[in-house]
Amino acid sequence: MVDLVQVACGIIGFAPAMALFYYTLGDYTFPKAPKPFFDDRKVFLFFALGIILGMVIFAFESWGSTVGTAETVLLLIVGFAAMEELMKLVILNFPRFQRKIDTAFCGLAMGLGMGATFTFATVYSYLLGLPEVQAADLVIVGFLGILFVLLHASTSALVGIGVARGDVKGYFPEALLIHLAFGLLYESFFVIELLEPPLNLAGLVGATAVVVYAYHKVHTTSLPALVRDAKRLLAKEKNA
Image (cartoon, rainbow, N blue to C red; front, side, top):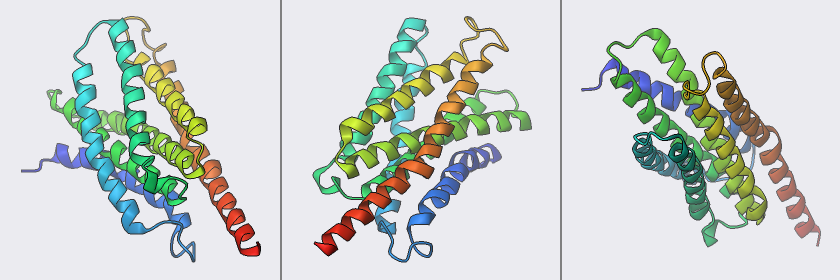
């Protein structure tokens, strides 16, 4: 049976993802956009795909968390970041998705799905290890969960934008750098053997700043610029 902890984890994982889903994508479909820039069914399919992929990356990263040495953890952070971003690139860069504007929105939806289930699984596994779950625990893991949703949403969207523009070499490295910067800063928050509290908070603040800035850029700059360029190109083709 579903218990209260599972319900709480579901809310922590999926509520931010769904809020961002409608917050960002709502501007580009009906009723705000008379002519939608993507097929709702296709976008929801990519969100569902992201839900599956989120569990896959959780399984890989859970295995990596059993490794103790600092050097190995550092290598795993880099390796997992590269693997996850390459996985997004392989999926979104299929020939049928190349140079199509809806690929950017599908990438965002896929990233939100990944962030939702990765957060759910990560938070649930952590709370299971506690003797008693307090309200403060839910607040803390809820905040950390939002960071994972922002991370995967922004990086997947950037990869999708690069595929839509035919400029993978320009956008994929940006997504990878965001993931690496977040992973290294986020992990430093937990390495209290090297950075004792409150110094370790600098890592968490830095990781938060990275993903908030990345998603803000996607929402306010990258996606609107893609849409403007697509409209401009379409106008030129009609006038030609």
